[in-house]
Each structure stands twice: as C-alpha cells, then as structure tokens.
Image 1 (spheres, rainbow, N blue to C red):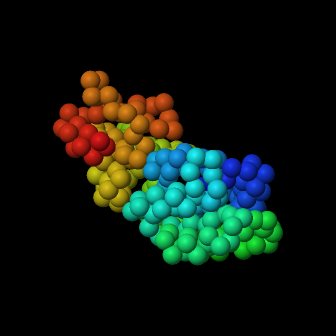
Image 2 (tube, rainbow, N blue to C red):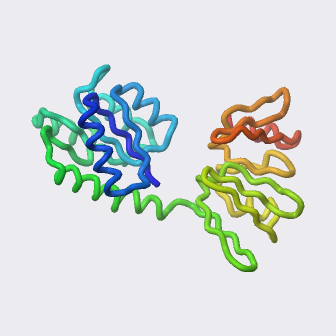
Image 3 (cartoon, helix red, strand yellow):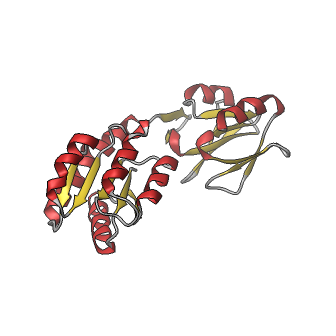
Length: 235
C-alpha cells in the first residue's frame, strides 16, 4: 500500500484527484491538505510515495514546497506532479525541482488517470515489491509478513506473538534471536521477551522503563541492559 500526498486548496479538485487515484488502486492511502507547511511536516513525519502539488497555495507556493521536499534525502527521486493553471511556469519546475510531470487546469479525467497509472504501476508497485518481508515456516503453512507493518514481537510460553498494524500472528519453532536475525535495523530487542519496531515508538518512559507505542495502547517493558541502546536509537 502506497501513500500519495495531495496539496491542493480547491476541495473539488483534491476530492476528484483522490477518487481517481483510488479507482486505480483501492488500497492507496491518500493524505490531503490545503497548506504547504502542513504538507512539509507530513512528509517529514511519514513516508510519501508521490506528491501532487498545486503551484498556488494558501501559505506559500507549491514550487517552494517542491524545493523543500527535494532537500529531504528520502525524496530526492520521489515523483512530484505539479497542478497548475499557468503552464509557462512548468519549465522552471522541471529545471529546478526535476518534477515528474505536471497537470494543467482545467484537466481531463483521462489526463490525470494516465499520470496516476504510471506512478502507481511503475513507481509505487515496484517499491512495494522491494519492501523487506518476514518469512516464517510452520509445520502446516507459512507466513509472509511485511516488516514495516510489524509493531512488536513478544515471546510467550515458547511461542512468538507478532503484532502488526492489521492483525496478530502466533508462531512456534522460532526464538526471538532467530527472528531478530531476519529483521531490518528498524527492529531492536528492548527486553528479554520483546522486539520492537522503532518506527512505532511514540514515547519512552525512562522513569518507569516503558515504551508507549503508536497504533496500540499496549506498553512494552524495557530491560535494563537494553535501555541505553534503545534510547540512543530512538532519540
């Protein structure tokens, strides 16, 4: 599932773009805002797979927003599509921001659909294929879990509980250390019975040695010997 950020101050246009995008890929997550600064903050906090930016926004221009996005290392090559009623400014966008494409108002559904299809099929879908997976074999069946969706893993009575943003899995025949070897650097052992995905760490309570997580109210204990590494990695 990819994420597209639409920055457009006309609600009719932004709604139309969102509906077209989801008609092509129903599992897309769409973020919509009217303000450049809000969009920039969102890009810093989240992982965006493509940007659709109106050039004339309420607080500052989409061109300036595009420049600020390109200054973030993670978005050096991320598709940026400009939405504009002033075609003559597109040459500036291509030269300075290396935008992926642009849409001129008023645009047709066919024009926008082609842009979305190309980005989704050759950009977001390809990116999804490269995302690390956790492969776990059991006696009867096997699991294939997206690592980015794993919040934490808990050891319970010789079994492992894997909690993701969508569902929970219980597996046997694996230890925490064996699982940890299969995971990316986003995962840390924070206690003898827990592994946590640091991308879901919302807050570290140093006084009570607890981790407050995003997406769940459950709090994970922090073991004394893991505390220093965990705090250093998350702050």
